[in-house]
Amino acid sequence: DAGITQSPRHKVTETGTPVTLRCHQTENHRYMYWYRQDPGHGLRLIHYSYGVKDTDKGEVSDGYSVSRSKTEDFLLTLESATSSQTSVYFCAIGLAGVGVYNEQFFGPGTRLTVL
Amino acid sequence: GDSVTQMEGPVTLSEEAFLTINCTYTATGYPSLFWYVQYPGEGLQLLLKATKADDKGSNKGFEATYRKETTSFHLEKGSVQVSDSAVYFCAKLYGGSQGNLIFGKGTKLSVKP
Image (cartoon, rainbow over all chains, first blue to last red; front, top):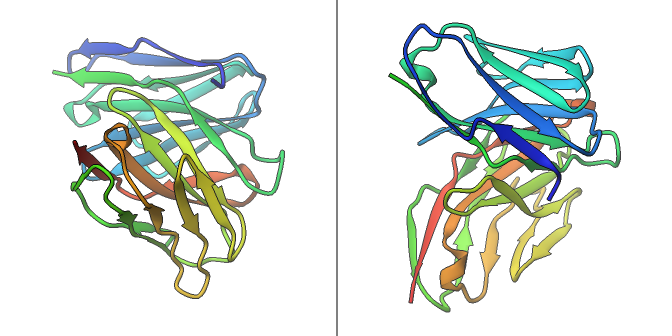
């Protein structure tokens, strides 16, 4: 257990509404990631963070923004949700920089449905 | 570009059968390689890893060997159990110090009693 929680765990919203998902960690790791999981696509990286206020885009960042104002929290925002953003969202923390490889530990996921 | 390709599922086996799930990756340098497992309704868990050529990762009876010459990291288990039913993801490290991972699309394994 890497001390990662995600909230909410389930959310149903309507097209055009803003949505914020929260990832919280208790172990002070520097690297945090947001992925989405869709059938036939595996996991795809949305955004990642390598420190407070340091974030960068991943493979599928369009329509998403992130913020990290403190080490333990990494927020993912859908400014105006669309049906194509219906997915399961996973947060992960990474041990990059600790060794020569990166192990990532995943949260339990948030199932988001956009109607 | 960077990619990981794994065999499409679903894979259905009887208990105690031998399992192989193929995984190949694009070779840019010598990336660390990983297998993750996702049980129904849960997040991903690291199953095993290998950081350099010829390394063998192993855990819970699963093994995978880092083959640089064939750019492969196939997952094997000699005798599967019903409890191994899950989705398995192969992944490689890219992106330098940021430690970003790129995942295959996943292979669903169902083991029947």
